[in-house]
Amino acid sequence: MKKVILTLAVIAAVACMSSCNKKCTCTTKVNGEVQSTIEDIDITKNDNISKCKDMNSSVTILGQTTETKCKSQL
Image (cartoon, rainbow, N blue to C red; front, top):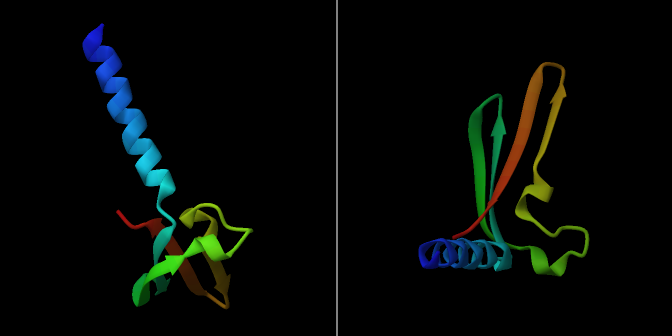
């Protein structure tokens, strides 16, 4: 029982630490090729964004696909 409680406590601590991070790294690709990567984007300045993945987007125009993927910095 102690091992189960300890395991759950570790999982909760890791989840809390990852959700508290408010800096993101975003990579933009055009047709699958990386065009740019921007690090240290601070999302605390924007009330509409609570998670890095809220900034993900993808659009296809005239056969050209532009995709932005963002993830939390560890």
